[in-house]
Length: 489
Image (cartoon, rainbow, N blue to C red; front, side, top):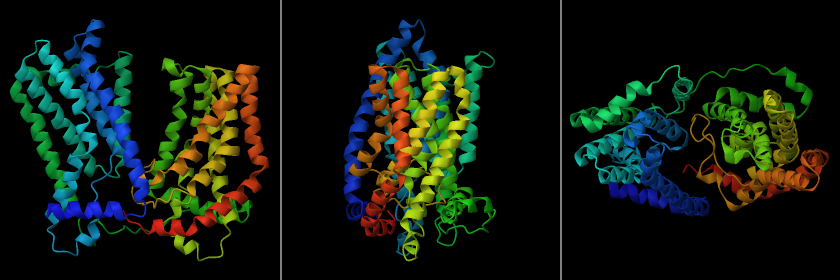
């Protein structure tokens, strides 16, 4: 039966309308995986000696911060790891046992790169420990325990699906604990480090992580199995829609209807709420650049990069999926007398308003200097004048149907990648950096800021002509988009 499931997955991959996109992404992902393996392997081999040079006891230090490693892995994989998916609904009509379907789906996650990538750190690090005189049996037990925690995270991620509030709370808690430890108010590692160290010193304690893995795997299995019914877990939940009349948007004329629909969509659906929350996180991204938290990011080019980034969170995360947000009823829309220009203008107006609000919220960055605030202002102008058009243009080639009831993949998925979108995306960040560089190295920073702002204002001036060209592309891609939205895999 497993062989049949694998055969179905294989056929689904090759018969998908986005086969070429999938193949291109797989090739690109191979290079990314190789780079990750290289970095993790280097850390596994070199971390021991690096800590030793810093006059720290390497193994004790690693165990001290292992709690952050484990929790960080859970939070990161919640944001990025795909849920165990097979094309379940058709299988429920066939003579397959539901337990077999669940085991196969969960088994796919066990083989996920999110799990075995950790081996490239833990195996070399464990070998180094043994070569440095640590007890081989103790190291082996510690190594097994670490992978029990990693795989426990894998199964916890299954029943944490769409519980964004819980993951946010966990992340905020450990961020506060990390800050408290840094400023020496409270050190959680004083309690967790003895446990991780004890896995090496007291071998029998390995039963605790093994038991944890067994428990969470069982819970994940039962959680998935309980929802494997068309009239229960797989059925779409229907609730009474709520939302104001939003009459204040009527001032925008014909675009007001689409603006109201988008705002209601954001207010009512998990996926859009998650995306908006993620876009708010962009506001804090500037702390890495403007606050010199990372030395390599202190150059003038990176200041402009960050300026565009912090004000463009909503533009990049929400705007890139126009018209995919409407994929559930896009075929119906195409049968109506809807002008593409009014539709796209409403999307443009939405991201422009959000960018303006983001720029206002970034005013406190003036603490790092007036030049920082000036960079954010001109970056916002570039976002509104140029990047707002580019995300709409890129949306014509991103044919990704969006499940609004899922909070997963807030930053997109494999169907969002192709060479056309990559080509359209490059100017979003490289454009303002290049313009600033021209001014910075010829006259000075002020000319760099002026060039970025002028190009953004030019984008405003030629908005209608740009829209006309984008509309032509949307019309030429119309039937390909409709076909792609029919794909369920």
